[in-house]
Length: 152
Image 1 (cartoon, rainbow, N blue to C red):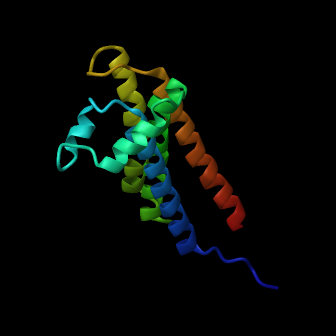
Image 2 (spheres, rainbow, N blue to C red; image 1 turned 45 degrees about the horizontal axis):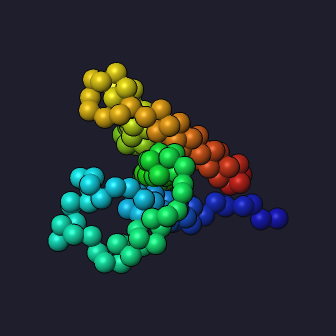
């Protein structure tokens, strides 16, 4: 009888690919549906968006999407992507430094929204963002739990 041996490399690659996919989906939503007056759009090398992105944005211009989809979902997707990528980089290694890298971003993201709401730092303090940060963190924990259970 064979004992099931976990394929750690496969899990790391899957986690990295999922993280990259979520990053690009969040970035696509952001680039497609947010105002081009945002600072991020001025960072393009030519200071002008590529023509394909203008075409894409024009095609989606009449699309009615909820505010949470346009403003908060990309943040949640980026946070989950970050956590998956950090987890794939560190693999099975455990320790304080790994935990600092993994958990600092959710803490900073949630805390920054609270500080914005209190007008301590610049920003709008959107509670929908907090909800999506919490959902991303719960999704990460759930994914890790399912992966752990399936390995043994």
